Image (cartoon, rainbow, N blue to C red; front, side, top):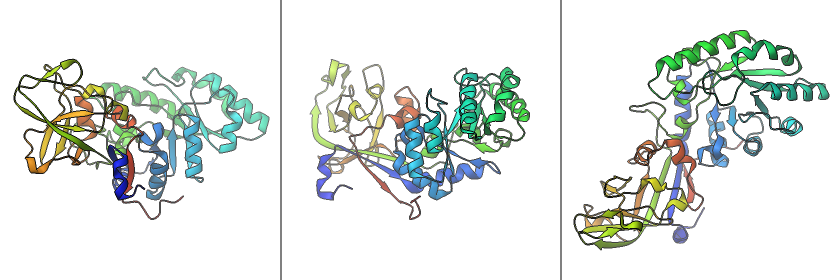
Length: 376
């Protein structure tokens, strides 16, 4: 923690609400019904930090975690020694002994990976656990449904603890696509009656019990991102505020920022804040004459970005904010109760996942509402 008198060391502060994090996971758990609710914590806990996210979710009752790459799996294992950890990226070549040593379960998505894991288990004379992943419509990773009979002989050498697939369009209004994937996966899951099955991501949790099987795997929703269009019961987890380092005025007709792409149409009061694209605030959030940009929030007012986003600075139009409500040192909300992750994402032409996972390393990071039971 940074002492209060040393806050000047940072231009902006990123606060994680641990209670909201736990609350969101518990809500997703309740929506999962009888299925186990796991947690996807890849991309360094969606940008929030594995060291913070994993203990908090463990304290809430989460016992199974999914990551993308081996170093993330190793970190989760160190943070939660008793957890079940799945490696979504599959079996990296030459990683068999490492996975065995750290008790990480690979998600096997090709015949080659299955052969490698099977051969390693034979060499160790033990049936180690792993998941198998089928592609039902994503065309990314995963075995093909027609591979089912081909791989059957390989399964005798290891313990298949989970059969899974991934929904491609669960967060979009494409019910036929979702139903198609569900039918394909249901046939696959029935072929492996002794394995738990998992299909639902964050949005899939809300598609109903048919999609839940024995395990759900929410990700973005845990961190306050929108899983489906419309109102969400999920609480904001990330609060990002940046300090004003200067207030200045641009006369009507003058331009603001690099390239002179934003001309102000009135005498405009500008607040310059100490955040930019080097901090992970997307450059696409900038404003030009023919393009609206991102919004921030201060003292009851939504305030627009003015001009392009710089590496370390953003100009905000605060003309409508009363003079006595904003000054040098005032903190401006960039994410939080008023500026939601997905609202900012929409104005940047992207998705909430990119907003979260781009959160930079120059912030003063802290957490509130720690669980007293978050030690694992």
